[in-house]
Length: 236
Image (cartoon, rainbow, N blue to C red; front, side, top):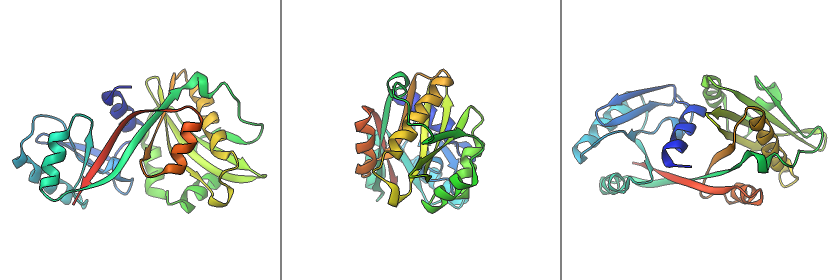
C-alpha cells in the first residue's frame, strides 16, 4: 500500500469536518474528532516562512498548531523541530488481505456488524473515551460503513467502526472493555470486520495504531497483519 493510498483511505474513512487550502497547506477542522482530523499537512511546495500561515489558520479554528508528517517529508519534520515542535504520537499502519482474515469465521454470536451503532456500542465507546465528537466523524462517512459489536461471556465487550474506500476497508475506534480483554473479543471483531469487508468486495483490511500501543500491535501481528506505513505528528 503506497503512502498516497493510505492517506486517501484514512481521510475518506475518518473525515474531518472541513478542509481548507491555505497556501501550501491543507488545514483540517476536527471539531473534537481527534488528531487525525485536526492536523495540518503539506500539499505543495513550501518554505519555512509559510509555517506561520498554517499556525494562524489552525488557531483561527480554535485548534493548537499540529502537523502530520508522512513518509518523504523529512525536510518539514526538521523545520518544525527547529521551531520547537515536539515529536508526538508516532503511528503505524497495518494491513492484511481480506481473504486471509475472513478465512476463519468468528464463533457464533460473538460479533455483529450493524449500522447505525446500537446504544450499547456507543456506551462502550464512551467508556473508552470515544465520545459523541468521534461518533460524529463516523456519521460523516459517505461510503459503506458498519459498526462491529463484539460479545464475550454473554455480554457486550467491544466495538469498532469500519468503512470502505475503493477496495480497502479501514477499521477505526476499536475499544474493548478492560475487564474483558485477552479473551478473543478483539480477534473476533477483526475477523467480523474482514467478513464485512469481503461482502463489500474489498481486498484489504487496514488500520492505524499508535506505536506505543503494544497490546493492540500484538493482536494485529497475531493475525498476520503487516506494517504497511507510518507517520507521526509535530506539536508545540
